[in-house]
Image (cartoon, rainbow, N blue to C red):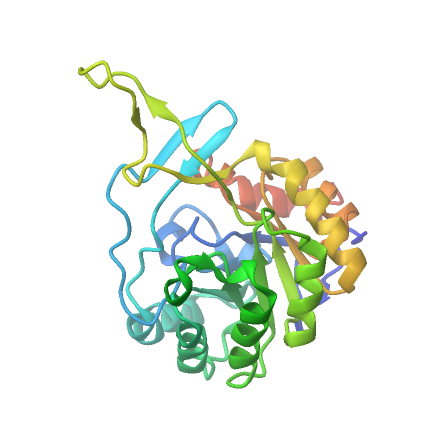
Length: 294
């Protein structure tokens, strides 16, 4: 378990505290910089980056429910070229202590390596987080994480174009998650983000026609928030025990106790996501509490 107030040595660098903004919850940093002092955090994981711009899914993209939140943003992003020329330079100019991890997405094996190769020269980037929950269009939209051979090929292609750490973000829904993590490690992964969201849907009943309709424009989305805490903590413990590699624990973090749940399970860093939508300063508060020995 990480000792409070000590910097965390992981992914070939040090993090001043274990609190990082989870992917997709703070854009590329500038979107929340007027509210959150990013340099008080351990780091930020950017929103998804794909080779080409993506408009994302139709609205509504977010829906709250009693157990947390559903989102179906659809990996909307400006594409790697704009990220390379606009977003990453902004982070390099404005951050001096917080580390930067870039979340990478794609819909074909080469997409991931294309993004990694284009961004690899930026020194501000500590690591790449590979979101392998994306649908592989060449295999009937099967998720990259669902086939270990495909997953290993994806990671190997990224490893060929960068020496930076590769952090694989896995969903808890894959069969034998620890075994999948071992396969990823053997292919060149340096760590894991656990866990990605799990699929779900909720309906709205005020349609006027008397027919329930999904509350998300896409019809379904990913479940995040408090309900994901226990799932993420278990996944963190199992994968860390099997691989011995660093883990970024993600899912359901709202309090310093939640942070310590992940650290006790073996996480090196802890991502804060959904809680920041309701109260944007939660990540900064958690970082401060941890630094005080909370």
